[in-house]
Length: 145
Image (cartoon, rainbow, N blue to C red; front, side, top):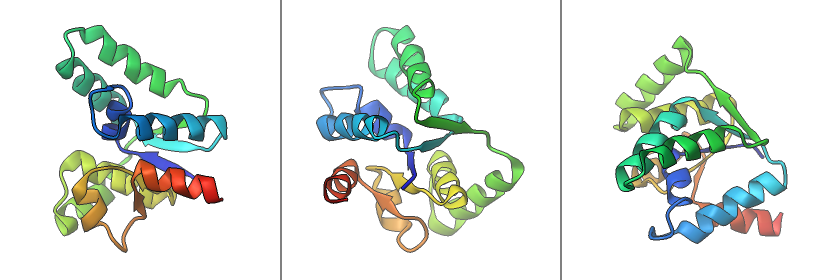
């Protein structure tokens, strides 16, 4: 199995105050320890840096965490070529997704990965389009598989 992880999961795994923190952190650690490939759009770096810097007083923390994600041995970053951008725009229009959410969905669809997200729109609007799971569902699958 190969995964694409929405930026919200990475941010969630960095903040103990957030609901689901433990499961997100455990799932990310489990994927890395099992050397399971994670394919992310380069957009993830910008989203992580911005989200963490906005929620903390230390702007450097967002930048540092984003680049730590990029340097994980099981993470592969992909650019957003024109074909994927067109695919993302079609998904955004057809399934009423926000732009960044559509990019993650398009990468997952194009790369045949499972999208990991807590985003309600991902979980409800992409049924039958892209396989979307929460960190808890991924952990359960890893435990039985």
